[in-house]
Length: 362
Ligand code: ATP
Image (tube, rainbow, N blue to C red; front, side, top):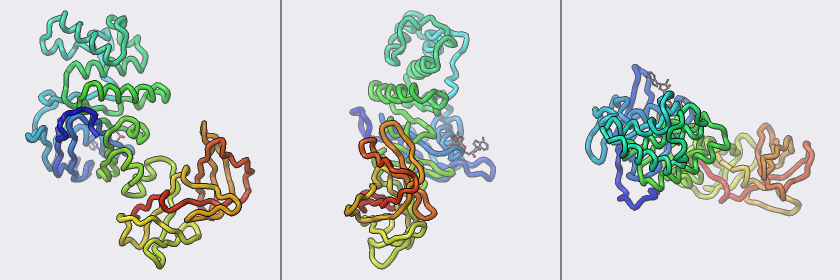
């Protein structure tokens, strides 16, 4: 949800928007509201249409059909520089031979702001993005990757846009620094109260930062929701698998409403009642590795499977076991305290309760 006290109204609205390049449909007809003050992230694999969608929002690409409105006014033909928006690119697009200060002040200079006021604002923005004042005169090429990221952010903020667009700005940054910058970006969003629209391949990145996430696949916006909704109620197998490593079991309806038969693993399974698959003859059951239990002697669960331990991986504080069940490999994740100390080849019984699994349509 938006973290500011601004009214919960759309700042940008897409109605029936579609984008084709010749015969190729890059973005299939979609409706989307970007709410004032929210952090919205569009995620999806390479080629799914994220950049095309962002470029249409920013005015760098005109939709082939449909309307884009800004606070209720149609802006399909409005060029990017006339929109109250600013894009932070993956490449950052900084002026390489200029100082940090000159880079940040560029938008202010274009607007004719006098030198003294420009410097004061640049120093203020450097504070916002946590760059030391001593960096003001430093050549931007002598800054580290993370520092350059902050310069690009400060420059974007100098435009004082209502909406900031981010085109995978953290994709070329190492994991540890990325984690730091993700949190900083989230803080920056809260502190500035501006609307952020961010695109990334990484759902993990999206989960950390966003109020809402839109998932794209092959040009279609398949689900929009809060991170919790996407995690707990993925609309289909694609979204659930995009969330990370999961166990997906194909099932077909057996006799009862909540009674299903395994297609790719043997067994009869109970699924929690679920609207998504109310009338379906086939479905997928998604069980996250942390919800799959290894059942000890006499222990029970709504659903159980027999398997053989096949591999074991240390994942920091957790251990992942690969368990072969028929032709399928199931993943189980246990904390180190629960480690099995079992050798490959050992038989185990896996179980999960119906409420811990998600049923998605085929
Ligand atoms: P990535 O994460 O790799 O950047 P993406 O999800 O942002 O991918 P887009 O860049 O939006 O995907 O591209 C979606 C599809 O549209 C791709 O198949 C791409 O080749 C195609 N496409 C994008 N721009 C053009 C263009 N100007 N002309 C023709 N095809 C294009």
